[in-house]
Each structure stands twice: as C-alpha cells, then as structure tokens.
Image 1 (cartoon, rainbow, N blue to C red):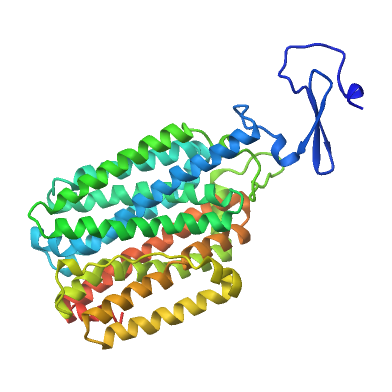
Image 2 (image 1 turned 60 degrees about the horizontal axis):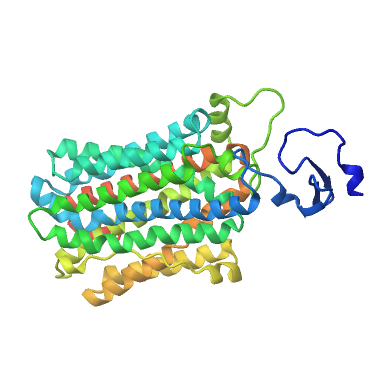
Amino acid sequence: MAASLVSDVKVDIPPVVEEIELNSATIATVDDDTPIIRPIGLALENAEGRPAAVRKRFEIVGFIAILFFMFTLGWNDGTQGPLLPAIQAHYHVGFTVVSIIFVCYCSGFLFGSFLNVYLSNALGFGRIVVIGATLQMIAYSLQSPAPPFPLFCMAYCFSGFGISLQLSQTMVYVLRLPDSSLKMSIYQMTYGIGALVSPLSSTHFAAVPRWSFHFLISLGLSLVNIMSLVLVFRFRRLKDILGNEGPIHVTQTSGAQINNENQYLRILKLKIVHIFALFLFAYVGVEVTIGGWIVTFVEQKRGGGHSSGLALGRILFIWLNRKVGERRVIWLYLVLAIGLEVTVWVTPSLIQNAVATSLIGLLLGPIYPIVMNMSGRLIPHSVLSGAVGWISGFAQTGSAVLPFITGTMSSKFGVASLQPL
C-alpha cells in the first residue's frame, strides 16, 4: 500500500512528500515508505511550516497574550470610578464637564470600530493589535502628567481608538479557537480581574496630590502589552497564525474578493447585528455607569470614603449557563441585577450597598461573553470580524451616553439620580 503511494522520482523536498485525504484521516508517506495516519485537522501546517503540535502550543501562547490585553482593558475601565472625584477637584469641573471624558473615549472607540473593517483587509490581525496597543500607550503617556483638561480628554480618544482595534481583533481570534465558548468566558473573566485590581491602585492615588501617577502604572502595563503582541504574533495575519481551521472558517466568495464598501453594506444589512448592538448598548452603558459613578454615590450619599471604592467583579457562572441555557439564563441575571439595584436605591446602608453592588457585578459579568458566543454562531463568518467590531463599538457608545446622562442629571438633581437611571 505504502509503496504504491511513493513516487520513484527523487526531489529535494521535506520528508512528507504526499498526503492523501481518506475519510476522516490523512495518510502521509515518508521517504522510508512508512505510512503515517493522522487526523486531517492536525495534518495541515501553517504558512511558516510549523507542525500541528507546535501550532497548538502557539495557540495557547497567543491566547495568554490576548488575556493580558484583556487585563489591561479591565484595568483601564476600572480606573475611572475612584479617580473621578480627584479629576473633578484638580480641574475644578462639575459632573457634566467631567463626563466629557466618557464621550471622548466613546468617540475614539466608535472610530476604531468603523475603521476596523477596512484595516482587517488592509493590514491584518498582527499589525492592527500592535497599532491599537501603541495608541493605548500614547493615551497613558498624555494622562500621567495631568495635562490641561482638553488634552486630558483627548487622551481618552486615543485609548478608545486603540482598545477598539484590539478588542475587535482579539474577540475574533478567541472565537476561532477550539472550545471557543469556554475560552470566551476566560477571556471576559480576565477583564474582570483587571477591573477588580485597578481600583486598588486608583483608590490610593485618588487620595494623594499626584493622582495622575496612577497612569504611569497603566503606561507600564501597555508597554508589556505591546511587547507581548509583537513577540507572539509578529505582525502576521490571522490565517497565517491559526490557518484555515477552527470552529470558524471564513466564507469564500466566487470571483473577486468582497471589497471594503460591500463589507460595510453587508454588515449594516444584518438585522441580528443591530439587535446585538442595541442590547449591548444598554448593557455596557449600565455596567460602565455603575462602575464610573458608584464611588461618588457612596461618598456623597452613604458617607463612605476613598476606601469604599468598588470594582465590578466578573465571576462567570459557566456551569449555570450550560445547565439553564444561554438564552434563558440572561433573563435570570437581568432580573436579579435589577432587584439588587432597587435595594441600593432604597436602602441607606453603606455595607448593604457595597454587597449589593458587588453582586450586581457578578450577575452582569456572564452576559457579555454569552452574547459574543451567540454572535459567533449567528453572524456569517465572512463578515464576523467587522460585525464584532461594530457591535462592540456601538455597545461602547452606551458607555459614554449613559454616564454622560448620569453626570448631567447629577448636576441638576444630585448623584442620587444614578440609581433610578
């Protein structure tokens, strides 16, 4: 059998000279006429010729690099709440003016989400994530010396732009990995760890004159993020990193490739994309509003000090999601979160409010990865990268609109308006 598969002509090629696909396995003949049978999924090598086992290890290393980015994202988002009172005091601005930072962050995020569709084709995964990480680093460099308020706000445009590019690309990377549902949960959980750890630093710096030095720590983390993305992915495209395998395969079109304009139109015509975007607009808006304003609420209405700063942890109930079902369990999380939010509104107790807010964070945590997993299954894979970017970008609009409305209402009615909103 093996002898019939080997050519008599000797040429200078690697040991494996021929592979024949047979049902669910690949028979490969080597130059000593010994057949090797291995699964088709492991027979392919990527563009650099790495064996499948090496590529598997590379997927793990790449996933770890992406998890570090998510930690920096959680760190970034967990910073704002404890620092808001210090920012207001330093720049002598009220609730409405300080809320401009959320608008600037959102503007950068939206621009990055829109541009991501074009950049995905023009530059590819490896270059885009490094560009995004560099923009994030520039933002922290501007913020750390506490520059004039307009420049301080402009820095949020850079961070929103950079984070948007990285988030869109890395989510598609995770969705293409084996067992992507579990990995998406771990991916989002790492965000929660960053959001939990960050207030430990920002709460400390909020109580000292050099409050902006907290961003020096953020700057250091962003530098590590850049180095890890460069060393691991080396500016390569996603197909060169993961090959054409995995749960998600890019749909090939007949004839010429779809141009960027058609990609935009195809995404905007998908009803499911807008449903996901509107849902996450409300979800992310609520999450960021609570995280951004809860410290001010606790200080002014519950008599807490800087040490009362809270981070919304993301403990992902993976077992419950699978047991109940992802669609049904979202209703459970939302109803319980609303009930706890009402208790914070009507109960003037610092301890109760702290516990309830923490539980709200735990309940809200699983929702985002569930939606992303569903998007990977329901959105055509040929436009998945751009669609995920648009969904996350529109969702981030909620992170600017709702906190800005909260700041505006707080200027007129006081920060107690946070809870009913």
